[in-house]
Length: 225
Image 1 (cartoon, helix red, strand yellow):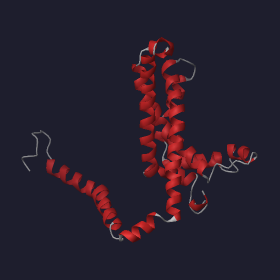
Image 2 (cartoon, helix red, strand yellow):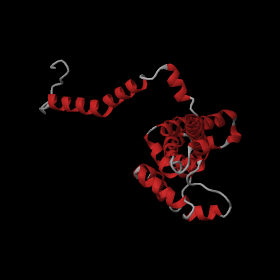
Image 3 (cartoon, one colour):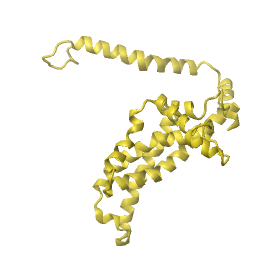
Image 4 (cartoon, helix red, strand yellow):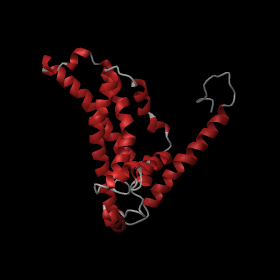
């Protein structure tokens, strides 16, 4: 124990280390171990049958397809938003910049309820879209909208620092292909980051927003998507 302990004027190293180890085991290590043990119990034939089930295949198409589509949309519009916030001064700029971080502050349940209130068939936008025969809530379109809401702040905040560092004369594409490539490299970095983030969010805990908003299984069977 003394080998790992660093000299400190504050007591309680053993207590804090024990609490940290217990908390990490209870929250992370034990659930992961249970997941691995439970997942390794079926045989290969049973596992193949589970993975190739029609509902499972529909969920794969929905998850990865929606994440890819949302990543493309966020890569384009997220870069435009970041470019506008960095390069231009306009009334309400700080307000728009603050609103970008709103999905970070809102709980996932609140975001899902808010999207449902707006895009539901009797919602503000949903009612107008229904007149054109377009339904957003409880469909794959709703999943894409929810993922766009989640991923846009990540794209904007990852591209903004890079754009700040780029010199203003690099904005003039006519002055050389090399300068244009540097700007495109900045955009490509946002695209790659956006793809990784959205695919991770699609498979992770943030899936609660689109699940609450757009793809609750009892309202919209995955096989019908």
